[in-house]
Length: 481
Ligand code: FAD
Ligand code: SF4
Image (tube, helix red, strand yellow):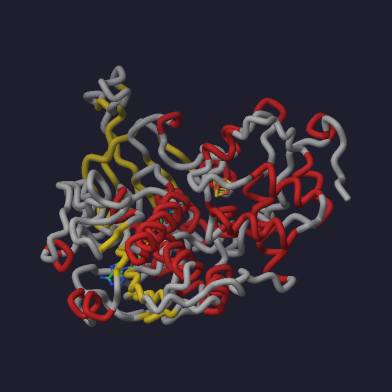
């Protein structure tokens, strides 16, 4: 029975699930920050939906979830049906419910804005966690095996989403990843306080139950060639992500005590999740760093995106005495999610806006002593509406630090083994897929498809999920012709 009352949004405020108290977070608790709704809370929060008739939330959601419909099913406690509906558009709904920047996507366009948006992400997480815990699994009973086989390179959200949709179409998906576990940046990038790693192993069980196979610790181009994959499979999907650092070219960036963001997060994830702390070295990508002891240290993180936020909040949990984020523009122009910035502030992170790093300074023993920064002001918007940071002469100062973490962002690199197959790469390293005369996400090689960060550049989990899903649609079309 529905628990909805007329104008429930007026009587019941928007509430999020409880969060881990700040004292625990700052003393090294790596658990997921947000807890879970109970049945009543989920029903009441879902019942706040007006069913406004213009579901902007669904349009703004990159996978176009049927949000009002599954909110209604939650009110009626029809959780297994809600889970089926969630999965019809999104193969990783419990992940997106946790990590999407909802304030910029579905919740940011909720009609109830001034009364507090419906907590769409938290309800999505509730639906899928509850359904999986009570035995719901994707219904594969009507799937007929086609005898076709597709290799998926990369077990990140793009690859997993593609594999899921292929399995639903009766195509055997075999997913290869150079890492020892699935998830890509979900596993080795996004910290556990945003996404508990048990969520990924549970999803692996679900996918394996659907018949998806994984070949982990296998790097294509090194352990297995693309020619072998093309010979063995009917088509190949490439979801290799974006791992080339944006090089700030800062003097002193190679000093001891300066860490690139991703290796710092990857190594930390391995240690926190109890995975092999040393992992397997990856050719051409130096991800094996010795993690310095941050206890009592002053840490400066350069960069204001999601990666920067994950670094500052990880440093807090690793016992750093003082953590500062320096960003060259102002707060309004920061790329990181506003919710993550608020959480970081609450955990004690200090933000210095309008500070551009000039160099990293060393003491007598070549150890980092700080970052030389200059204050900035923002230019008028350019033709693309972007406001650039303009240094203010004479405003230089030293930001003292024992450890500096550089988080300037990432770009993809189209691997040579792919371009040698005739696949085009943009000069920004992105794989070119789709376009005139091709199926969506099909590259210049008719049996090679690509999607996610490798194609669009570093972006979001939900956009990678959308592209993997839609690329699978194109592969099904090719193989059914
Ligand atoms: P990836 O997740 O990068 O997966 C690519 C996979 O391909 C990897 O597992 C890699 O090992 C594998 N691979 C690469 N080359 C080969 C090869 N030759 N052979 C075999 N395997 C290979 N997005 C959000 O929406 N919310 C967030 O809160 C958020 N936080 C982030 C925090 C950090 C620190 C970072 C770096 C990113 C964050 N993002 C976030 C972005 C998001 O994680 C990515 O956009 C998303 O993971 C891209 O998915 P993908 O499948 O394209 O690539
Ligand atoms: Fe919102 Fe992301 Fe879920 Fe879409 S997938 S409804 S954007 S949380």
